[in-house]
Every structure is written in C-alpha cells, then in structure tokens.
Amino acid sequence: MKAENTTLLLVEDDPNDVVLVQRALRRAGLALQVRSAGSVAQARAYLTGELPYADRAANPIPSMILLDLKMPGGSGIDLLTWMRARADTRRIPVIILSSSKEQGDVDRAYDAGCNSYLVKPVAFDALQEMFVAFGRYWLEFNTAPELQRISRSTVQPS
Image 1: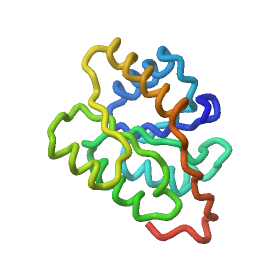
Image 2: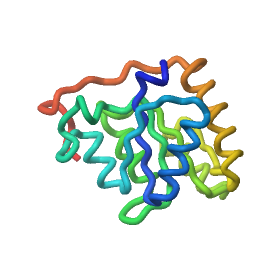
Image 3: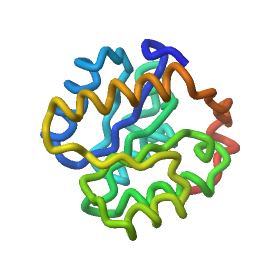
Image 4: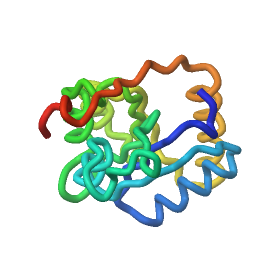
C-alpha cells in the first residue's frame, strides 16, 4: 500500500486534534489522503456513502481508519462494533488513537476488533515520530486485505 494512494479516515471530534494529526502525518512524510469525521454518525455516513459523502471520487472508501474512543453521541467502540458486523466495512484496518491508557479501554477496543491501539503522545514531536513508525508498518510492511466493494443495493442496513 502506498501513501499517496491511501485514504485514511480520521474519526476525531476535537478539531485541534484533527489539525495536529494531519500536521504530524505530513511532517512524518506520509502523503495520505486524509478525510475526517467528527462523530460516529458522520463516520457511518461516510462509510455507507450517504449524503454528503455519496461522491466516491471525492470521498473514497478508506484503506484504514484512525479512530478516537471517546466522542459525543457514541463511542469509537460503537463504531468499531458496527463496522465489524458489516461485510462492506469489516476488513478495513482500524487503529485506535486515544489519550486513554486505561487497560479496560484497550481490552474493549481489541475485543471489538481493532487492529492496533495507539496512545496519543502529549508532545508533538513524539506524535510525529509515532507516525513515522506507523507509516513504515502500515504502508511499507503490512499486507492489506482486499476491501469489499459492495454496491449500495446490497449493503446491509445500518
């Protein structure tokens, strides 16, 4: 998987964290196509191609998702559980990016089907360094699954 051909969906409710993550990804040399969703509802709409995300040329199915755990209107665990129950989203790699180090949060995320759990570093330089390693692993070494390409008519209901 090459970065320039990879769409990453960042599911994060804090606009400041969205900017920091995007900046850290760029500084880490990862030219990912980053799309963002500020809530579980927006992420579901994006993943199912509902308006305003129906244009798949502008809003492609993500090759991976960075998911915050704690958001208003639903948790990252809720979204992950929903994704893993659906044929069209279950193979998308989901990496939790959370400030929580609580073992219970980590365990719940893995039980729900996350592929990795990263704790957000406090310092920007540490975040950037984390994304350098992230990029090497997920974009250079990891072999990605073939993502399901199911038409809207066969997509399971929400």
